[in-house]
Image (cartoon, rainbow, N blue to C red; front, side, top):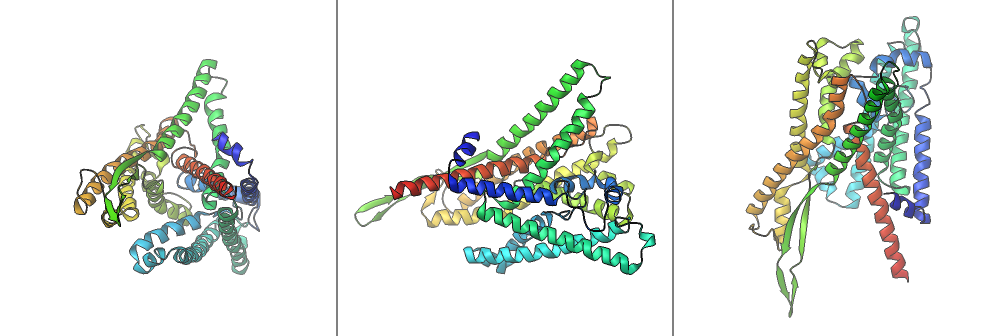
Amino acid sequence: MLKTVRDAFKVKDIRDRVLFTFLMLIIVRLGCQLPLPNTTAETIQSVTDKYSNGAFGFFNAMTGGSFESMSIFALNITPYITSSIIMQLLTIAIPKLEEMQRDGEDGRKKITSITRYVTIILALLQATVTSISFGNQNLFGVRATMSTKEFTGYVVVATASMVAGSAFLMWVGESITEKGVGNGISIILLINIVATMPNDFANLFAKYVAPEEKSIGARGLAAILIVAIVIAVIALVVLLQDAERKIPVQYSKKVQGRKLVGGASSHIPLKVNTAGVIPIIFAQSLLMFPVVICQIAKGTSPEWTKYLTSSNWWDFSSTGIKYSIGYIVYVIMVIGFAYFYTSITFNPMEVADNMKRQGGFIPGIRPGKPTEEYLTNILNYIIFIGAIGLLIVATLPIAFSGIAGASVSFGGTSLIIVVGVVLETLTGIEAKMVVRNYKGFLSK
């Protein structure tokens, strides 16, 4: 990895792209520190303190802490991510969108344009709800002392600021994709998550390593365990991201003129973690939705919301063990979404038909329906393994939080995103270097 980065800085074009990406990320982090108009540090803290954990913890990590600080980037790129997922699902359900996707570059540009509009609509809805609900909790000052006209003005300004911030970050992400390195949206999400890690490590250090009442041996052991767990989770995530099942494919020889052509061997790479982090995001979003609505609307959380909040799971005390029922629901949802998302992104019947038309076959398996059934069986097997791997990675921080009473945002889902984006970006840099060397060879 270090060699790739070092070699990349030797190439002017790639070096300029990397520097442009760093510049854009600096702008993103600066924007995350700019508070909404008509707010103060005191009013922001009084409102967001109650939302720093629980259902809002994961959302705050995805926004790099900008939600907790109520900055102009409070929504960050979450509307764009939600919009992209919605469009991906609609592409399967709506034939017109599916046709656009098959139209090549022009079709993808149209879908991207629609995604942008959906992003603005979602950002407008989220910003309006957030501004009104938090405004009623004295975000802009004491609500009881404001007139309706004055309060409406504050809401309009805050809403416009958050929507503009989300739209600006969408532009920054697309600019990084075009002029920088890697996928811009993923890079922004990566820097947001990484930005919250120092605070998490500081909290762990203060709770388990710093207390003077503990012996030096106990504090040293705690530090070693924390580092070991983090390294183990990262290693597991890397293994999960790279693991794949290669299905061998043989192409039959054909007579063209007086020659035999074809007969090449290839393989179909089926990733073990086919759905990526999407199943966890879906499951967490569905579980958090009613909790978030209750907290925003009422300012408090009813008793039943504790079953849906991950911070209450894995608590084996006599009063808290009952809330772990929510974890069982979470496990079922993750596995279900893993199968669902893979089914709409990988079609065994289409793959089998394409292989048959091209004269390809899996050794020992007849083309057509038998190939489709074989791919389906293999896919169902590795999806389950991938879902279990996802659950292990996602469960570690949840179990750590419930058993030890610690709360961290760099584990589980966040680490899957971070490692995945880093590997994807490095692969993209290596591909650009290969293309450059190939062009240089042709020019010589």
